[in-house]
Image (cartoon, rainbow, N blue to C red; front, side, top):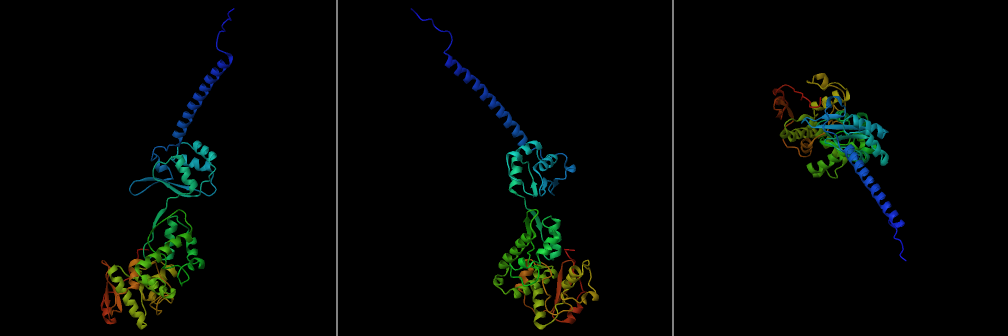
Length: 372
């Protein structure tokens, strides 16, 4: 007797096939959803059009001299990720703050305070990575030759590198001074004038370390004999270099000027440097830089006034550059004891051996200052 054939598939196989079909639908749905999520994330992560059109209304956006637009973002101490995202969105640096907030929830890294610059389109992932790692773009600041500590402090504060008061306190800090062969009470004269790139902001003591280390590295190149020199003798050289820095205009004359000052020191003659009088007027008395020196100025009773005090002043009067340092360490020998400005347009001086010859030269000039 034949058995009747069952209709359909066996129960277990049918269930398996239905599960496979359902699983396929689920996997497909997940893939579609995943692709959709990735597409949305990619869209949100991508930077918006750069630069934004509302540059005049946006305080974060700046424009360089060559027309390059960049964004300068300041992250404040203790600022929340939501606050940062809102400001980035308003600045046009990110498309939506909601994606930014999501990233902040998924990543527990804390963004670091500071000032950051973005010169080209940057994704949200990249921006967040930069802020979490604290990768600030250094700011360029140029310290010209002949600047005093107070003027250097003002320049650094203007560039938002560090506060002027913090800088001026640090240059008088014995712990900082003690790290270098400096025999004076401040770092005046020992901070090399150059172009630097500092993070914003940057601690004043680190700024000083950078500039002082540059000074001694450059000094080794300019005058190898300075290596291991007694700090007091080194200070004498730096003081003289600072005076030459504020006196010379034509680099070729700097060694000859240094020679004149050494000649005067050797015979006990007063240096009578106009630059030291200017230092007293501007740095000690706090008055504007003079255009002309009068008798009442040269008669000011102050240790830095080399018209009334013999020998070198107590300390440097400015930051000497390479030309002045080279002149102080390698003066040009001569019999000259005097010099005065003879051509204000070219900046050339007239050198003489006798006072009578000096008197016959042009009237007393005071150099115009590049750091007024």
